[in-house]
Image (cartoon, rainbow, N blue to C red; front, side, top):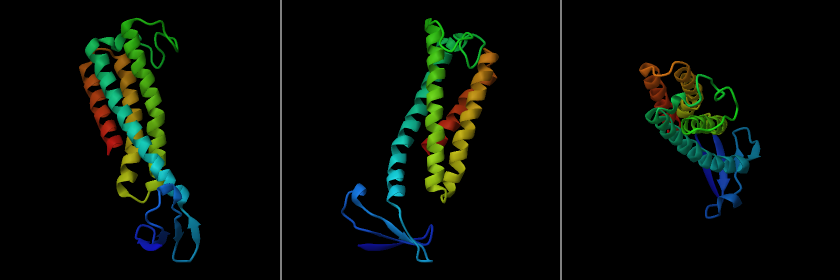
Length: 178
């Protein structure tokens, strides 16, 4: 067993090197001598990594799909209604409707991943300054991006709105990847 001093929370950690992560038992002792098993925290931190990858790939997919919507002229595929598509939850599909509706559906699913990732990162890594900055930024720019997407639907063919929507999307993507 090795003893490590953690400067983040001034606790001692004991673990046995060479064991698989699932087999390691971490016992943390703070300066007051209280012990707690941090095996759950360690496994939770491992589980955050796939969520981070899914969120990053999902945001990239949202960017590509958004560019596809703009380049194919499909932004009017759902008409001027938002968040519904032609006033319906599941519309009758034409090509432009399918492109626009699939973009909205992927954004909705991706939003769940982004919020879950931000919460998990905040809970597990709240002592890191970059997480305290990036986790709220992810969520804030996600909602700002959705609002600008709605505005782009309500004000079609407005180049300034589309450019702002894409720019905010890039910031949202960067905050997730970082």
